[in-house]
Length: 516
Image (cartoon, rainbow, N blue to C red; front, side):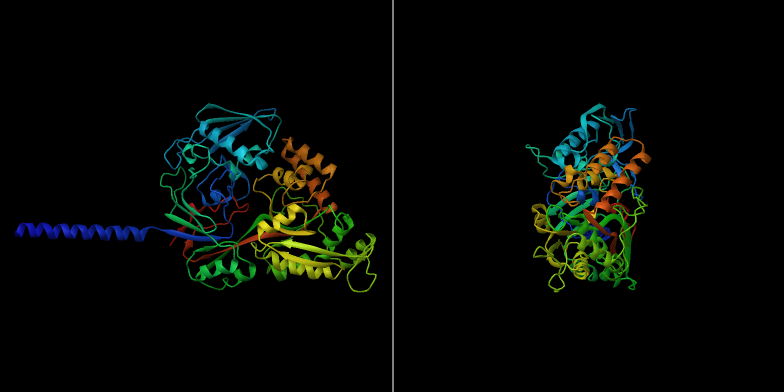
């Protein structure tokens, strides 16, 4: 090798070494955010299950929901409705592209919406849609058979997400969800994790982190252990007693947010003893709600009166909550024919003991201990209660088959930020007669009429009065017993900035989060 060749060799080697150092530095600058929650998507198709895609930010809808729980522009910049309330015009955001580079247009949104209305008919079948038209690339017109003021709120529902044509195979099945959000779907391992990466061409605020790994961990204690070892930076929905451990630790932050969710009991109104309103009311009086909030929830949450938490517009503020009154509970049970004829502490009627089953699930960690407290409180007024704590699917299967007496649930209320969905699903007879989470097989003609009237009433204040009346009737008739309103509790490591909980659980908005 000549001297000149030697110099060239050394320069080349240095260049290669320098390039290697640069790559390493760049790798070190890449930010990965690891978070964990208990819920797992059961499909890769956002039109079938959009909760995780919307929360992780790889799927977006026409309408968004702000931090006050109100609808806001998203992929649609604005919308207006005709005077008769039957024709809605949505003006789409210009310059948006899907993750594969395809321009976002009204035609694609029309196809995507039509598919979502079929795939999630249980949700969107409540909308009286007659036609969807596309006058131009940025205008979407939706025609209705009757006025329906809740339409924009329904179009914030995750299952109405915009998907690019490249999302589907030849049979129309989603093989990879291609959305428009601040993150791009990368991979999904069922029951294990979802991985998303930064969308550098996002139409809004670009994400700070380059990758998000969402780890699916149903067990609260396991999420805590991962947080302690710093394998994750955010542990979502921890139980109050676990969250309390982090309040004095400088390298962690405890975040809490009152949300549109209520813990409640649903009664099986089809069979004895809860086919009798007096027995349902007796349970309401027998439960010490304050004690549950204080001792089980460690003060995280507030006792419930009606369906909606008082910080939301739709709450009936005039509803008087059931008080803790064991004597009133005993009196109602006696009126219903339940007495303790043999002195064993359990009431009976016509030779049958007042023995019931209470079903709940552990994915929300506070529900089993609440169930134990309820069992003790009901014992004081003469109930014998068997607890069945099963995973969500198994518990819901029992409920749907009617193989329960009491079902304890954490019920999300405003996934559509308007009362129509929860009212139609949980309290209108068309919803209570099928599978669900609200009143079980309960029918009230006045409630049906009020809900139906509210569906076509455009005046917001008038709708509020109708829904207030529905809430009052439900509390009086007691097909359910409202216990307390949720405060979601997440814990993050102290190097996380910009993380904020949403009051309707609409999105995690991880594009606002950075790892310092």
